[in-house]
Amino acid sequence: MLTGKQRAYLRSLANPIETILIVGKSGIGDDLIKQADDALTARELIKGRVLETSPVSAREAADQIAGLVRAESVQVIGSRFVLYRRNEKDPKIALPKQGKK
Figure (tube, rainbow, N blue to C red):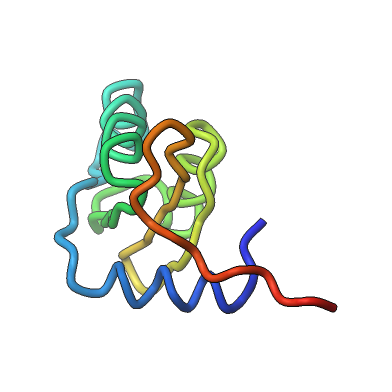
């Protein structure tokens, strides 16, 4: 589970990256899940977009894809969403430490 500070940090990293995952009229299929899984393994942080013709909303797509690839939904704004999954073997993003409560 990500803290607010970690989410804010990931959002700032996601700002300049290109959208690589697009959910179209066919919705969320096996090919899209494989693409998301491979991209998260390689990059840890990916940005996706849901087209108007898609049968699911951006929030539904983000939550569904995140659940299927064991990732965290970082942000959903309009038709775009950001997903994060730490690569245990070769981490690329160092998250801020969790604060004491």
